[in-house]
Image 1 (tube, rainbow, N blue to C red):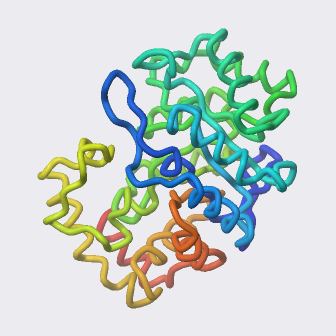
Image 2 (cartoon, rainbow, N blue to C red):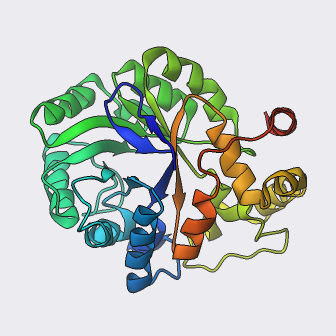
Length: 310
């Protein structure tokens, strides 16, 4: 496992990070399921322990993942290594009601609750959880700086859906931004990387395996169960679109042994990327993901991947 600097934040993170959304399982907000089916508590703790043993030092979670369950499990799994691990959590997806809440009282209270669940005195990184463009105000960014000055967090940033949100966060002083970027969804990264490099902002990549599509397990006949959040994210037309894209990526498996390793190597080939977080629900998934650490794609495969989906 190799490490990289998270921009100018002073944090050093493993190239492969641990994404903790999946271990939170399914939770409901306003009667609508959010999360991933099939998570088992004991297996989740074993998975976290395997990640640490494999050299993963960066762990990403959020209070909304399993409505706190993900943070609790992460606190348990990292109990013996909490002081050495780099832990990021997120705030803003209201646990009290559907919708978002980025008010100062809510954020300060939510941070204290996250620290309790994680059994930590501080967070290494605290991310605003996908705020809308209009919610990212100077006052909100000033609040995050004030919380950092209090010593409860070491750095702050923003997790986003769109490129314009990432760029606004960088302009507002965020030390890290978390974006969607993969071999089949390159647009956001291409728009954000230049400014991130210029400003020394750390890039955390999520969905590098495109919600599991780049593992090679899904095709045009895939149907996700109703309690899996992908059942809403992938209606039939989008399933057909993704299946078509996946069918063009056989060269990744030929070079790397598996499509998923090739997809992770593609992301790690970008110098602006500090770490790529991958959701893991079993020790075996950890083993598969860390195989990509310290390795990039060949120039020929990089050119082909960029020409196909850039």
